[in-house]
Image (cartoon, rainbow, N blue to C red; front, side, top):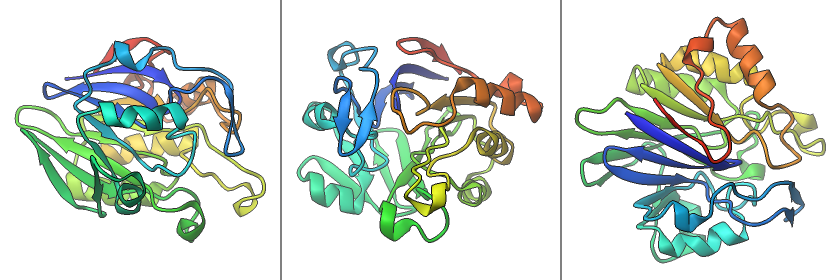
Length: 246
């Protein structure tokens, strides 16, 4: 069983295996951050989500995944898991994980899984990004994609871990015209539906589709894509501030 409370953008509180996991903290008010424009603030304050046992941070170097307020709150989380380079930048209290590396947090095994933040060859420009797979006795596997745009990457994860019970997919079809000729930097709605099929996911919860101007697809497009692939019954949507259970 996974409970997800959507804070906004990529930020959600996950309750899994008796612990509280926070994805990519973004708690700043609307404004421009490092060239990215945020249009809505968080639906919930961090204090309403505490205590947080661990932060699952896909990467630290883009404001739509870690804005200034989110960065300040990292010290109040139990621990922070992210990329190795991200941990070097963030410092004490942060654990950097290489691709496929595992770490045990009580009964939960967390594996850092690949993510590609753009088209093939974009890594040197967009920087390292990670996703996560969580496993615990008596619980189904939980996949948190992070800012991944690649179906091929999802196929690798599916091959390694088999069926995923719940997939939290960062969607939004992010496009920035001056980068990679506008190629997607996160999953499009259609790619998210394909990812759901590849993973064999029983439930898919989309995040990272509202609150910033560079998201080009929202819930309407996600719903349409899942319907087109005959997967509407797998799609579980959380409104901002709302909790859903999968």
